[in-house]
Amino acid sequence: MNNNLANIKKSIFYLNKSECVAIPTETVYGLAANAYSSKAVRKIYALKKRPRNNPSIVHYSSLNRLEKDCELNKNFLILYKKLCPGPITFVLKLKKGSRISRIVTNNKTTVAVRFPKNKLTQKLLGLLKYPLAAPSANISTKISPVSKEDVKEEFGNKIKFILDGGRSTIGLESTIISLVDKPKILRLGGMQRSKINKVLNKIIKYDRNNKKITAPGQSKLHYSPGIPIKLNTTEPKHDEAFILIKKRKKSCKNYFYLSKTKNLKQAAKNLYRILRKIKKKNYKSIVVEKIPNFGFGEAINDRLKKASAK
Ligand code: TXA
Ligand code: MG
Image (cartoon, rainbow, N blue to C red; front, side, top):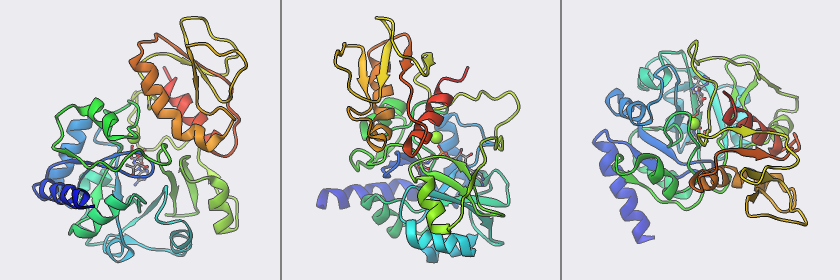
């Protein structure tokens, strides 16, 4: 614990100097900076090579703080009470007088906010005088990091500090729900849709075509290991990495299991780790077995589709 406290203090030291620090969350690691400082937030965009028109998520540890920046509504309060802290991000209206940097929101009147579950990050947020803007801690379009080592692989020593909180327990980004008008899901992720539906007692639509933010001509590619991926394959060629959802009787060295028992939650947790592993083994292409499209399978298929976009 002492070690943790020293590392939290080190994070505060750099964040207060408008530097970026990588922080652990239960979904993926984030590249964090003071959300109230444009100077600090610009550094996130430069390090990630992230297009400026893609707004970032702001992370909080308490409702008191959030109230200063956003308009809270009934749906938000219901979801917050049941599902936070956790892998869900809310898009809300910005409050007049909010200090959130215009760079974080790309000058929009809305902001995406979230309450991460990782204990170290919660403690860090509680000790800071500002919330943290934090997109996933990877170079834009690449695979999201789920451990300190992954973040190192992405940025080398270009970032000042990585707060080590162990491996992310969920392993996929948060689910994003817009609560600005009628609730709608903008991104599938670590919070299952069925849970959100249950809490709000209605079926929330997934806005699959929410083209939003992306600039014309910008590649659809995301979460990419940098080699071609083909989905819904039954048999691989001998030189292709083959991702499977359950154990086969006859296994080969190019077989990579997301789960041995078709457990979709476990598969979601392993997805980015396995994509990274395959990339390091220098395979030239990846093929993936058909993955059931329900529960966490929906989010896994969404990521694989984007990772295989041309
Ligand atoms: O689990 C997560 O959400 C992780 C951890 C670090 O919290 N963060 C994450 O951030 O995945 P990022 O930047 O990789 O993805 C954020 C997504 C982007 O697709 C962005 O377009 C969307 O959130 N977003 C941000 N602000 C928005 C807004 N005001 N309206 C709609 N979408 C927004
Ligand atoms: Mg990302």
